Amino acid sequence: MSYGQEYQSKLRTADEAVKVVKSGDVVHYSEFAMASHILDEALAKRKDELNDVVIRTVSNYFAPKTILSDPEKKHFILHESHMSAATRKLHDQDMGYHLPISYSECGSYYDRGQIPVDVALLRVGPMDKHGYFNLGTSNSVTPNVLAIAKTVIVEVNEAVPRCLGGNKEAVHISKVDFIVEGDNRPLVEVPPAQVSDEDREIAKLIMKEIEDGACLQLGIGGMPNTIGSLIAQSDLKDIGIHTEMLCDSMVDMYEAGRVTGMRKNLDPGKMVYTFAMGRKRLYDFLDDNPTCASYPADYTNDPFVISQNDKVVSINNALEIDLYGQICSESSGTRQISGTGGQFDFHYGSFRSKGGKGFLCLSSTTTGKNGELISRIKPIITPGGIVTMPRSLVYYVVTEYGMTRMIKGLSNWERAEEIINIAHPSFRDDLIKEAQKNKIWRRSNKIV
Image (cartoon, rainbow, N blue to C red):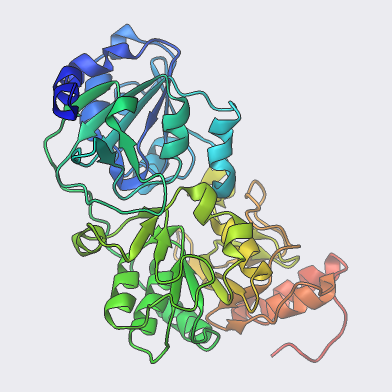
């Protein structure tokens, strides 16, 4: 049987294909921009026939119709390992649950049987002449899902860019059970986050620390994208990319001639990533581009892989830091905002890299509901808040008021002093009083 004949034999409507889902099944969607709204909508129609179906997603860009159709969670249960704006709202309404992960380990949860997959619902690019469907902009944990899924259903979408490997960036038709032809809706475009004045000040401080030949990872948010824009406008040479997320500003850096990757020890000349989110310009850049290399997260995010490149610069956002140096990057108290994602992986990997630097960045304050100024630097993490980065692993912390010296190796009082030094001036006296109360302070003249 030819690949074309096999394709036709497996072709189904979306409604026909999702009939394989049974009560109690675990159903896995593609990650990030690759989630299929068509297969989700078809499954939602079966709500009254099903009970206790777990829907697993990773930063789903839309609120799944399956979950919206069942606010009481009798039929469908959402497990989300990194909240998007859409799924965060569902979580706030008690319509979903967070699955804590360290992204580098996530694939092993499937490999070891900790997470079963009964049905995989995946969006893919068109089949090529060799019988392969490209996984598009999200390699991530999809290869691990494909390895254990009992049934694989793909929605073919001609708008999906053909993202080259790397490794495991495609699935062969022989591994696919049913094929659904979609409506070729373009991938969701995610504009860069708004950039604040504080972000710009933080970015300027970090730029002074980036050298020629640095290997860059940028996290999600306005400030990391600001760094990318500044690099594009700089005279830095031979920047490399080994990142979790490929974003718009990395295209700017490449087209400005800043990115060559020629000094990387691993994958020289390649922009290595595991998922991409941005605007159409980014997706067009990825399409059939041999400069870019898509890998699963258990490669891109492995700290021991990351550290094999020299001068790794990891830049990520945080929500809070306390005087002990603990970082919360994913929750506001008990309210889940995002997830651990790859922050732990890249911060740890950057420290192990020869000449590496890991920056955790936050504005010194935020504004409360009543317009009051609130310090993001706390005596202790807000009760219920999640410690994303333990104090033993944190080193560079940056606010608009400055950058800590490397706080690894500092005692409690030395850490407190460094951290208070980059707090908003209006809160420094109160933070000193709290540090004294907690016995992590000694008289010093270093506070500015």
